[in-house]
Image 1 (cartoon, rainbow, N blue to C red):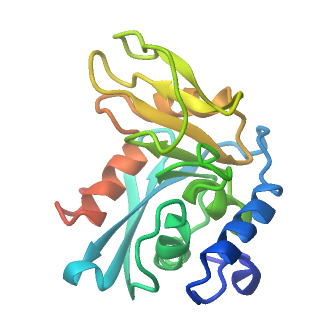
Image 2: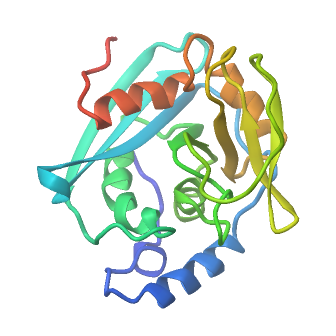
Length: 230
């Protein structure tokens, strides 16, 4: 699979300069497009990242599913030496190299990628889903399990109930109940998906579980809880 990525500019080698990385995030965030600009969905991917050997190895998982049947088509696990320590707000610089490798080894380019993490629901509007979308050109959605920044009103108890997530007077995503009376998800578009459409796609691809099926399967691989049944 071929994905055009400007690695030198968008993912430079880690030199420990936090201020420079934050400036780069701001520059890349200006390239995010929050409009629906994705093709008819035939194959959708889910990606997630875990760690091995006490954090020394980054383990990235990518799962490709059939968008109509939800059946898994392919899975990839990529391992790389972890390139930098955990720094709040800079997670994408730590996880993306291995994640990009996993995506590149799928048999075909996905029409949409669900990312375990945040899209624009980030202090500088460049969570890992947005960073991935900008440097790969792929449509992406961030599906987080907890809030990084922002506040919201109480979410109703039923599937589909939601509240806008706001930060500094701006809506940066939504808090979505994906299953009745189960803790809600933090949904924010990453790139080439609108704020309104992102939660609808999460619901469309998440019918039985809290997580949408692509990221649920990727989470199983990334956390080493099992392989995907095809």
